[in-house]
Image 1 (cartoon, rainbow over the protein chains, first blue to last red):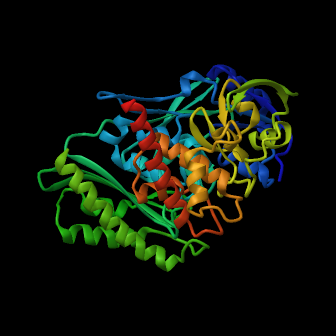
Image 2 (spheres, rainbow over the protein chains, first blue to last red; image 1 turned 90 degrees about the vertical axis):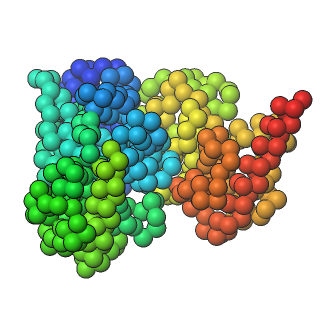
Length: 291
Length: 165
């Protein structure tokens, strides 16, 4: 049960970390909070020769909010910090909720949003609200930086668009436009502690009673967190009614591709997609009209 | 290569050379003989290894020893430094029957301390949420929830007395 042996590096700058990552090639692995990486190392699924701890890099710390630029969550900001940050609570309540209900207290005190995204589990709890709110991730390598929309980031279970030699430096969420709102809903067997069996996030932007724009993101019902694009296009430019959101929820069920596993059956997951999509749209609407 | 780290545990300063693959749990139990902190699952699910690092609870089984360099660690031994007078949380765990086999107790008490430091007047729901990372296979949790509620009251009363003095 002990960890395998490895060399440990704790660079103080991003540049030093990028150099270490490039020099050590495929034998290196990054460590942010450690709640996924160390578990994988313990059970032998991951055997890096070099572990590069990111906690000492000041530029990656913290959560920055600006009413023009929006929200920037540093790669090493803890889930507990995101969940309790006053700006996140005020402007991004769906994200504060997602970060605050996943796992347990100790994991939230150690784990990071960036780590949750890079781990790329189909059930990654923070992915649906971030995708729904149009988040991007900032990636850096020795050649420079790039940004990629989160909905293009996930490529499969455990697979992302990140290339070797890249470090996720921040998660960027735009400032919410007027009359927009987002929501996050989940079900699991044992409240928060369990990984979500199904999770759904919705974001809507209203123009009066018309749904100007909408994003519906489903988690744990496909190999990656996925947008229900059919349901979204069905709702766009339509007047907001109960019938509209019920039909959209039914459409989201059609688009989901769940499997049966220890957490839930595919059949149950499909039923829950309908329930959670409806609830997520209702709450996103409530928040949008007040915003 | 060993890494040199400086850190404190329950107020005592240590300066040690540690292998990078050793966890904080191994360091506490094997090198410092602080065996109050247990090792349960080793994967951050059970909470038996819970300690505080710079005032926040973490799973010591998923914390590399090298990462506590410059930090302050509190373990269950730090709750009653004299070894005689117990912390109100420990007192109430005994009085309400919140301890059976005792394996989860150290972690439970550290989570309780973290909760009460941040929320001196928790509701039952908040207590249960605060214990979400700690498993107990004996008590069924009710006595533990009660113990924390009693401890919260005692801590508030003694703070109140201090203020009046």
